[in-house]
Image 1 (tube, rainbow, N blue to C red):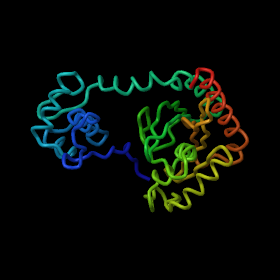
Image 2: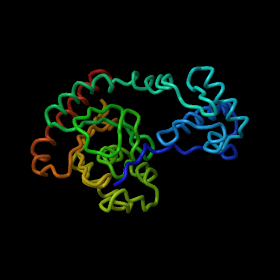
Image 3: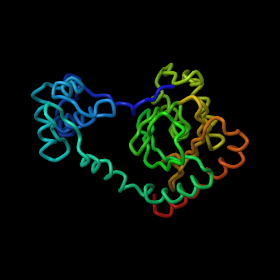
Image 4: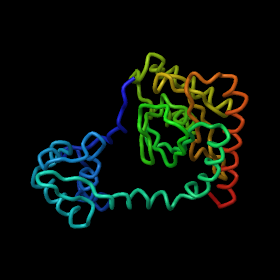
Length: 272
């Protein structure tokens, strides 16, 4: 399977954007559109490219880019614009405000050392999972994942755990009518089959997904719950599909579930 870049957040055109009101600051929304137009496939863009990708006029895109440059979030290199490291402040503000960030890291480090596999934590954002923390043990995926990376929820173990924490209508809204794109020949694409897999995940309290996101990749995930019992995040370990299933079930899964329980307990103690 070929590598996939983190998915692009859909960008609204000017005609489809909500009208300005006391609840919607249009210029701010357009500024976010411009920031989101930069990604792994488009790290540097001309003014024309930004305008095309956001649906803004050249004049509108230019004003926003110059404003972002004035605040230090964008820099100009000849005709091209690119984000600066200062943009990380925006994402780190979220991470630093989450108790999970501080509580989970040492637990995940121990888990990765115990099972000798990569360990990740993610939350649900719409129909995608967003990585909050990752402890890599060895590279087994063609996808380069890091904090902030996004993957589809329907074909990932953490995604199914997180979707399992939603109500039936919310799950259906996230999946849509389908069929969903096949990432590999093994990917479940029919919504009814995916919903059945999610129900099974809810019943057993963990999820295993093999070869659906990427050929040769198996992942196990378990829920992290807050004090009210709500699934607030998911924890997973990733292994090569050549790893014996018995090893995963008898060694990796118990360690994973214990780590998820430990993080959940810490989260409840902090009032999360």
